[in-house]
Amino acid sequence: MSLDISCPNCDTDEHLSGARNDAVITITCSGCSLRWDRPAAPHCERCGSTDVVAHPVPLIERSRGTQMSITAMHVETRCRICDADELRERGTGHLPPSLQ
Image (cartoon, rainbow, N blue to C red; front, top):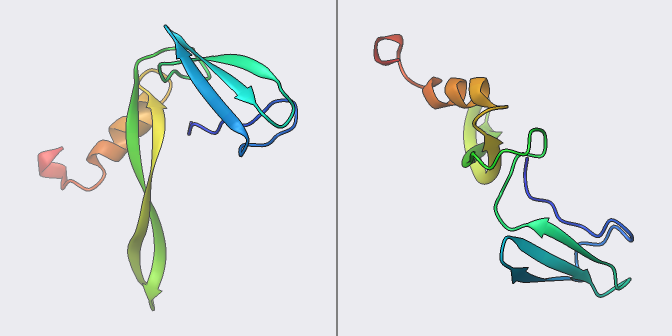
């Protein structure tokens, strides 16, 4: 549920500018002159809820042999309603059973 914004008309993400107006952001594409509104607050694309959290996700790659290392992190927006099981699982995945 990352925030990827691109023009729905010409698919560019490079020629966009935005202006905040209360609860919406008006986005303008300078490539094709299309304008559209999007909510200013992050929300779930599936259920529309604004009860979302920024969830860090590691990018894990093999560094040497079978050793796995975190090489980068990116942040995804997760819904507390739709992604509740995933958030609960990721939140306790590295704890020993006695601490869960």
